[in-house]
Length: 115
Image (cartoon, rainbow, N blue to C red; front, side, top):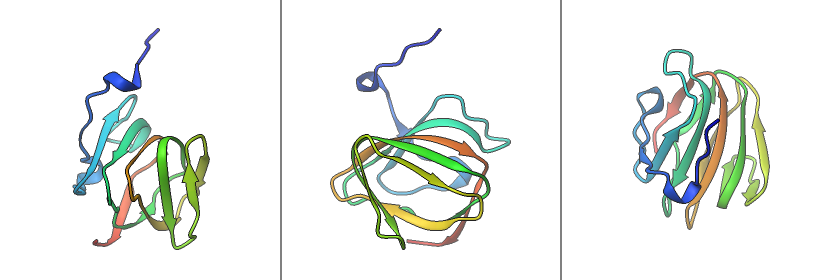
């Protein structure tokens, strides 16, 4: 059994799929670099935005703190919200004030366009 207190997590610069995004940090929980599958925490800093990317597998997430915006859908995910992106979905996400998200990934992402 393992227990993790969100307040004690030491996030590091996001490096999944070789992508570095200013203001984006992560904490892998059960993530496999080889398959791109697993669970991790994402922490978006203020005014952080991901590049447009395509999902190589199903991705599910819960917003634990703050608000996360999805484009081009225009959906705002708030604390407690669940989201799901099917394999092949392409989009980008951003936040104004920062947020923390629990992600369950089903595969690698492909960057389609920069910031």
